[in-house]
Length: 384
Image 1 (cartoon, rainbow, N blue to C red):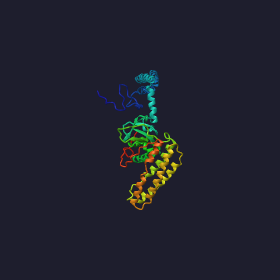
Image 2 (image 1 turned 180 degrees about the vertical axis):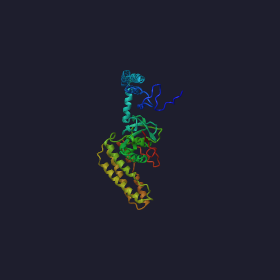
Image 3 (image 1 turned 135 degrees about the horizontal axis):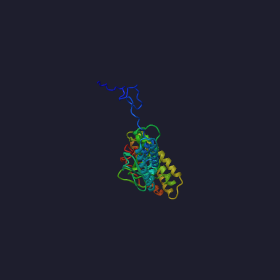
Image 4 (image 1 turned 60 degrees about the vertical axis):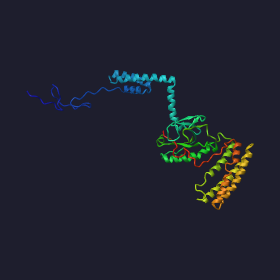
């Protein structure tokens, strides 16, 4: 007896006689192929997904019941998924009902709305807002903030918000430089009376980071904060047209105009650059004349008028000294008139006028060696 060779790839097995080869179907391999698997019901899959996510639980429950009916009628697979989806959706529906009755869902929705508006982040801060830093400091990265009443202790008070133009991120250094320029220039608009700003307060700012820029952050938020991050501010520093009367505003406009020209004193001393210092002295002389005239031209009320008139007279006397400093032939003569001119700056008549107008009367120290913790490169970066 002979042993037949094993069936080859084109030889059917079995006792039946060999016949012509039939190519395999789309699911087959070999001669006859494997049977096509029974498909899984798609509705059952959807029900399970919605049940797991607890998203639209009522829809998930309905889809689970529909899937069970289709599976029974069509003989499809997925009964377990349909049942699991229906059960999970039922649990989710119960939880949503409880949440709505207790206000939990409402809190979640409100939280989503707040996030969309940027509430809880530096995006939400506006001029006049006071806030606590999430990190307890106004330096480094700031991921979130909590707005609080200005009457309470707080880390910072927003005095300006500057919107940068759209486009690619300009870089950390350029954004910081812009913040430094803009914020220091705008502080006077919010706090017109510099004498009312405590000496422990400096300028800080929240700026966009490269990451927050991609989410649409274009705001520089200028902030007043304590130079000692362990301390906090209490009360608002705002004194502008919203809090001052017409007489106070008129006085502060003149005072601030004089301060601005005094702050422009040349970096080089007169012995190093006498011409530049003489030119600056001439500018001081000019501004003193303009502001004395402005004070005399305003319609003051009551005791304010005499106090301001005395101040204007002192400003005219100061002009003479600054004019002589501008015409000085040598450094020694320059400093003689320079010192005499400064004797009138923030003198007794200034304090008296301020008192009559109800403004701050403590003369700032103007300590040039003072090193604050804000303004420079240590200002906080907004990183959302």
